[in-house]
Length: 430
Ligand SMILES: C[S@@+](CC[C@H](N)C(=O)[O-])C[C@H]1O[C@@H](n2cnc3c(N)ncnc32)[C@H](O)[C@@H]1O
Image (cartoon, rainbow, N blue to C red; front, side, top):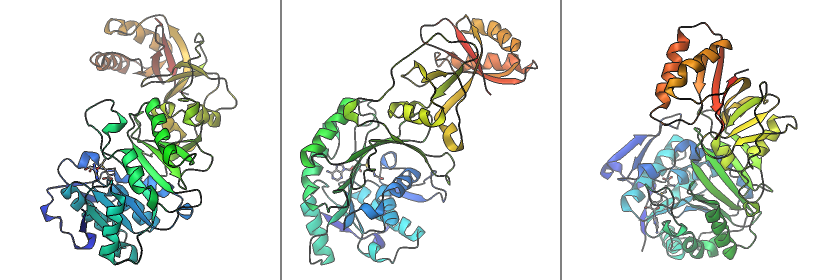
């Protein structure tokens, strides 16, 4: 049983939560039901993603989001792809918020009276029941035939406050959605189109399991895994793009959203299908040497398995030595500086040339000795990029800053360490 909401007729007065979306240049006010805001897709991510969909590859029909939450991703798809939309949401207040938000975006784009908006609806009910939802829509709009679906979007709810979770904890579950909707998906240039917005915390094994579930319904369908990051080395979204919306011959895509809301994202394409492995580089340390370059890469890029693809584009066939692969500060050593044109600097935390190797550890007691070494190398600002206890780190950094502020060095540098070494590498920015 699905209740129909008409976006142009709904009223937001019973919705208690609204907030400006700080990732949108216009600071769009979106409505949310209780606890709906943390689940909602930030507008900048939603829009960036919709803009990446190749409109001309889609088959006929409407766009469906079968667990639409606050409807933000659906609104971005519908306006950008210029198709009527159908959102389905179990929670009645969230369904209402979706209808309001779809209308807000349509107004913002001056499309509130468009044909596609006249046919856009939100249903409150079970998103697993594709047939029931489409029959409701058909009867409501008095259509001669059941609508076809050009794109099925799914962003299931998952347990909050847990580092990891099983695929069967997604609500709704992928296998139930596939079974409920597969018969109604139209065929585009390269099969049906599905966008599965999954948890960035899925392990490699779980990603493989997702592929197995997909292959059971659409064997060998083309696919692209898309990692999206808004910075700080975090993967914010992990999605699987299937069929006509997959990127031809691209197994993996890394999207770094720009900190400047107006700028295009930085996109890295390539890598190997995930069946070939995680794609995370092997450690290949060599003893560090004065004069070589050290770069700390974006941890999210490394996690996507595309670090080497990116490095090929910013170096001239350079041999890269991987000192640290896992964690928040992946560290590479190389002989020449990276060519960081355009937005490529967004994919490094720091890069510099080793000025000296100091045989010591980094504790509060060692700060005086480290400052002395820094001054010997004309360093005026030294940023700690060593993994320290979070309680100690600001104290060490503060002590270094205070001591260097009273001196007259000129160069800017950072300090790193490789795990297991009692040696600090002071690297000067070039
Ligand atoms: C992560 S949120 C979606 C957020 C959305 N992408 C947005 O941009 O606002 C997932 C939603 O799925 C809904 N949900 C869970 N099970 C469902 C079901 N069987 N049918 C429909 N919706 C369901 C939850 O209530 C929740 O609002």
